[in-house]
Length: 404
Ligand SMILES: [Fe+2]
Ligand SMILES: [Fe+2]
Ligand SMILES: [Fe+2]
Ligand SMILES: [Fe+2]
Image 1 (cartoon, rainbow, N blue to C red):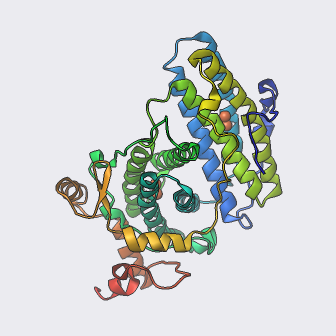
Image 2 (cartoon, rainbow, N blue to C red; image 1 turned 45 degrees about the vertical axis):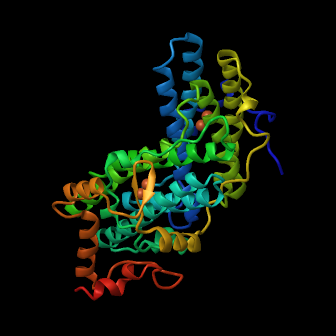
Image 3 (cartoon, rainbow, N blue to C red; image 1 turned 135 degrees about the vertical axis):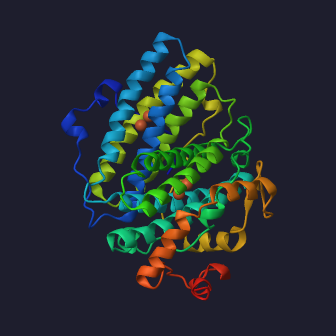
């Protein structure tokens, strides 16, 4: 069933404003929440945060009073949407439990984007990032059992496996090797555009989250792990935002942001298992439809261009959060030893990569220490392998046990 947000009726901007009680939504129930509902909340929070941050940047780059006012009015609503979405997360969920949700979301969102990405180079970029967030999930899962005595399976269920990916200690590239080629705004498939915006928003929010909460632990290994993985999220944001064509005008970017918000709410509404949260996605979709209409008017007026030049005739197939176990295993088997050189992917541990690793890993890695400490304490590491042994022989647990 095709859905064109440009021809749908939304909610007037004036009527989108909510009072404090409406913003302060009841959180979901930690014990019964569907892990993918948690992931959808995390993803949509990232999308709304990006809407706000982008709008602030636009505000700093325009001197047209009417444009500044229109941006401020929409931005206030984006902020309210962000509060409603992020306040769905209950205080009973610990910071580490939310963190496990962030990395599960990163894994299954990135895998879905990779599987549906039409451009081979962009798809390679998703595959590349996928194996790193997959490894983060495993490191945090070990920290979780170490600090809270609980198993990550209670949070991620058996939807996403937990085992090593590309080891975090070799994810630390020279910054120049995190730049990627961007799509061409004249020829790009609209789906690639939306994918790039979604992953950039999601990874940016993960980066922000670790920047803010990584110091909320007493244990040195926990503080260290958040600092180390937080630096990888900086690499991920650099990599993913590089995919966006910088030649898009501010108005075109605004239009694409609003369109992507419509796409994501529409996708998640269709898939949401919690009826109350589904109604939030529906409401926000109706809001975004009007925000999109305003963005389209601004583009016509100030760029003199028709938004239909850049938007598809209908929303693409919905983005789905679902298990990607076999896909992740295939990518692991093929690509675990990849790194990058400039905008390309290579297998050879080239000079500036080695030099950077030597420097940042000079006093060891929290991402390795957390596993070592866990093994010492429990006589094993934490893994959740539902589909058999690790596809990469050197990353099987026996391989480590043999070293002890
Ligand atoms: Fe929004
Ligand atoms: Fe990550
Ligand atoms: Fe990431
Ligand atoms: Fe919006």
